[in-house]
Amino acid sequence: MFQELTEQLELIFKKIKGHGKINEKNIEASMREIRRALLEADVNYKVAKEFVNSIKNKALGQTVLRSITPGQQIVKIIHEELIDLLGKSNIPLKMASVPPTIIMLVGLQGSGKTTFAGKLAKYLKGQGHSPLLVAADVKRPAAVQQLKVLGESIGIPVFTENTKNAIENCVMSIDFCRKNGFDTTIFDTAGRLHIDQELMQELSEIKAKTKPSEILFIADGMTGQDAVNTAKEFVEQLDFNGFVLTKMDGDTRGGAALSIRAVTGKPIKFTSVGEKMDALEKFYPDRMASRILGMGDVVSLVEKAQQLVDQKTAEKLEKKLRRQQFTLSDFYEQLQQIKKMGSLDQLLSMIPGMSTKAFKDLQADEKSIIKVEAIINSMTHEERQRPNIINGSRRRRIAMGSGTTVQDVNLLLKQFSMMQKMVKNMSRFRFKGIPFQL
Image 1: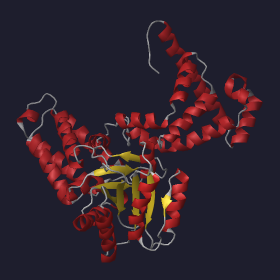
Image 2 (image 1 turned 45 degrees about the vertical axis):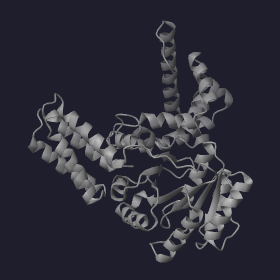
Image 3 (image 1 turned 90 degrees about the vertical axis):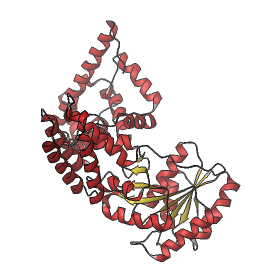
Image 4 (image 1 turned 120 degrees about the vertical axis):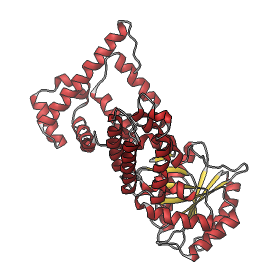
């Protein structure tokens, strides 16, 4: 997400930092470029104009003009303004003091409500809650069945007592929750290709009769200003609590994320960044601003690792590394751990300095991981433990079995040998009294 915007801003920042002195003329030129970059990212025109004017006013202040590093000062101002634009701080879900907490999902058809319902249910389950999914889209063909299949895949029950009346089904689900120990119920409501009065009437009745703690508007991040315009109409008629931006892994512009909060005044609470059920992130304005500016997001990366990397496996690996017993089997396990955390480009975007443009060719490395897995899977257990026994005939057999070439096998073995030497050197430093943390 934000790939194009990040690349353009990096070029603008490079020019700003290259100026020995900052004056009104070069600030004006930089602001024009920033405004153009925002508009190309499909940011709302009024939002882009106000954003740039605010930066310009602060950049022309005496603090910046007299600063030893005026270029860096301006980048700092832009970072602060981005955080303000995106909402300043994370707004958590409001949980009811007396269960069940009722969460109502609304939005147009195709925005990703049903998929997000499953992701949210899995997320809440991981937080120690006991969620129930409720089918409140009874008019779209196969909508109820889609939610059932999704619920089964993540081990979350789906309430479908009344599949003809969405309002009654939502009301009945609350009593079901209380009787069966569920503390959260999630309404997957109906959508349309466009807003109509029938849809809004149904949603208003569900809201009136169930009094949800949270109403979340699901916005397709790839639709840009269309999502913003639709959100404005929903907030006027339904007054929801916050946003969820879906399909952000496929959007390289991100205009909706930068506009939607400023236009409606409602916070962004989650972003959906992939198709897998665990591809869901809480929205932190400061972290997102850092990503947009190419500064990375180490905090989110560490949190993702803590959630998805098995602690026992990590401790076991650490011991092996210290004893210089790292094998190809261990290397294969680490690849699986990395794959759980998401695509390489998503992970790299969280590392400071790893700009999308500088590493734009790394997308091909996703295929390289698959190739490495195939090669290791074609090895015997003994070959994985002792790669030095892999001679010419074994290499040809492994290449044929993995659908690769002997050169590919040679490259993997060479890289692995270099990795083992690096681990060995790290161990030597430790034994010489230079500690290191793996």
